[in-house]
Image (cartoon, rainbow, N blue to C red; front, side, top):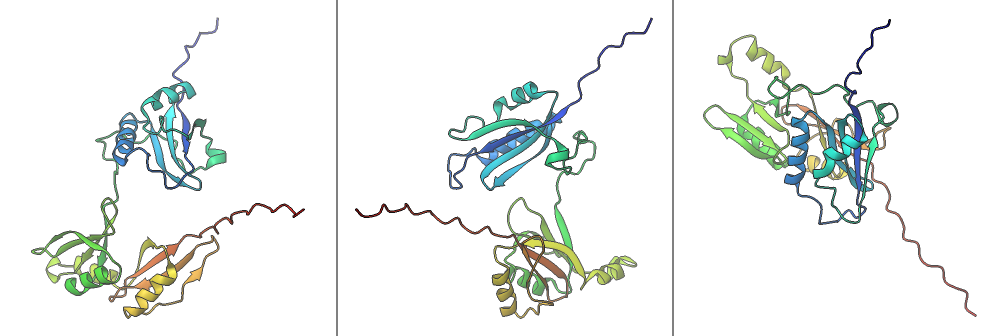
Length: 259
């Protein structure tokens, strides 16, 4: 007689909560704090896969794990976007094969297990702290986020909650091979990429500041435009501008022929 097997727990599937509200200037959306608290709760429970704003048309997407759609709906009862009036709210099965395989299907490591939580800063090696600080602030518009005059440590960023650049001046007292390795990183491609609202305007600003561009801005096959530039020490960066869709022309009502 064949041994009967008890069914195990149902595997968790991926579900997408999609909200569309249409008006890009809508001012009654949930606060950023409410959104973060809800997402943190899902993250602690091991359900959160990812979330973010949608731009065309305006909306918000959240991908979560649940055993079935009914459980996903129960989990979303406290979603701050749920009571939003005059908005489309739907919970869909997320199919990685048709909607993208960039979603991580494996559960994230538990909290406290050494998982990475945030990209904090990227180091750029420069020769002089004062002159480099003036350039990054005056030309690129970065602001000091943290600094220590005694050690020379300084962080610059474009705002709170974003990755910072840390300007590092090599010191001989570091010893070898650390000192030589740091010098070798100066004047190379950093791999750091910025986004800009206008590549052409950025090119003009850089040229007015005396920056020599290795090549003019160029159009990319994916529809955007890019520009390469370097700081006074030769550290090279890339900035890109996303392709803008042309604004839809308003249709004028047709005039009835005069009788």
